[in-house]
Image (cartoon, rainbow, N blue to C red):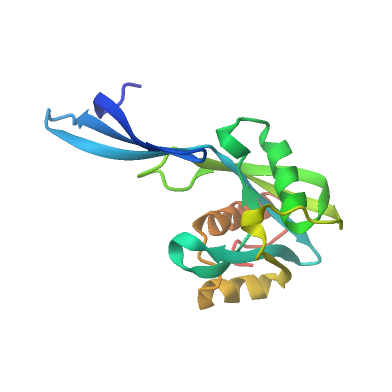
Length: 189
């Protein structure tokens, strides 16, 4: 399928080890021209560590929004490297929570900000968890971890303690997976 917006030219306006920001000059289907800013970032893995009717979540200070929030463990390979999504998911789970998963079930792939970024993420359900030591990065030194019930999870969303769109989208994939497996009667649970 041919793209409906044609790239006329492209230039990198900023780059570091985590991202590239480029500005593209574009031509729309009607022939009018414009610019498009695009953030290129590597895909990441997000893990839902589930057991005993709830989830293990992490909380940390998020500099861009200036506050602490809860989310499922997630991260990307350093220096925009590529690698197997499940390996990355297992690494992030152990690094942030200390847990090792006996079973890692892929739930799907989503884009997190498809209007501005190339980045997407693979979602995994981690079960058969075994506790271990964390190995957090320096940026994660203020990270906290907590087990939350499903009711707590929903309350956190309502109260604004979870604002991470990737965690909320991953939860939707989990509900769809459970529904397909006959594990939950309806997606509202």
